[in-house]
Length: 189
Length: 302
Ligand code: SF4
Ligand code: SF4
Image (tube, rainbow over all chains, first blue to last red; front, side, top):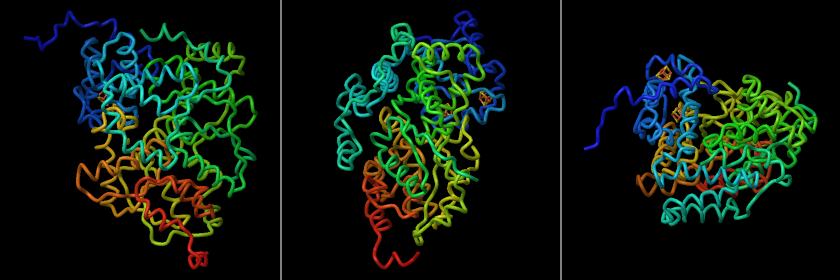
């Protein structure tokens, strides 16, 4: 049977204490666990950990638990929690950092579409400077569950019919500027 | 209140795809207001929420490239109509100002790319320009036709009003209501104004995304709105494109036009149906045609 509880010695406190260096997360350690973030979050209902629980686990150093959660991916970055937090913690930025770490260390639910979409988007923009909606969604589907393309067919047709879908790959002219962005290999595994 | 002599304009990727009607109606509205709008040359993607989820450093650099390109033109005001673009640009400005390390990384990138360092470019949202630079009073004077007896709910979405924006009050925004009333629309009370539409969730965790939009649509309907007015291409897309799915799943007869603020204002100023991209509506097409097709006798309303 899988053990459900965690022991203190598994906690990574050094990791927890590195959060305040992150823009927006400075005050993470002073969370009062009031739950305002969870109450404001429009997605809390669908999350496995509530935003308040995420903050609690981060602060106690339970790295794996938060990185494996679906919560960080369900966060839509709407900043509702961040403007309400009485301790001025930008929970949104905490979620962003967790998403980045989960992608960099490859810990995310496999075939879970959200991180896959983020990476497709990232790679397209990194190469071309602009995003082409159709192709990002197409590749996300191909890498997760191609069958979803069928369920998207109707929406696709309606967008096509109203001239709102373009198959053109777009890009900027001065593509060379992008080479000065940090090397992709250093950022993603 | 005095509009600037010229505005720069940063379309962003969505306005060249699913949000094309936003671009069409924005350009038409500004043309009718006789305010020059110039597209930012060789702009790149703002990075949106997806880029920030992979790399914070390059997300800020990408957004900064646009700000640097804007600075090069010498025009002070940069209009970013998409809420995600608006937030990404403003967040970057704030991070550069507040964190020396970010400032240094971004500065180095811009230097390598041969671009000027960042300066005080003002990132503006169309709502902010319409309200602060043109003004409700002027819009009322310029209105040449009114939508009689049409009730709408104004919907801001998330990233325009919080936490870096100055578009309106983050809790109780009212500027869009004021503008809509000025051009003759009846506005209903809508407490979900700033509740998130779920962004790209409709494409990833489809059921959750659709559910959020169902709640938004249902509440608007319950409050007596016949249409929702938006200021973000992603909100407009989410609310507009999945209504047939919602009808199928819930059996409820929801078929509501989802308009851009610039379509409603542009029409009141005399814009033409196609120029305003009104033919691109997916849901509520019948109503859109009924409201915005100018019949001969209706013209005399002016
Ligand atoms: S709202 Fe802020 S202080 Fe309250 S639980 Fe959430 S993070 Fe902690
Ligand atoms: S930013 Fe994320 S965690 Fe915060 S309220 Fe929005 S969806 Fe929830």
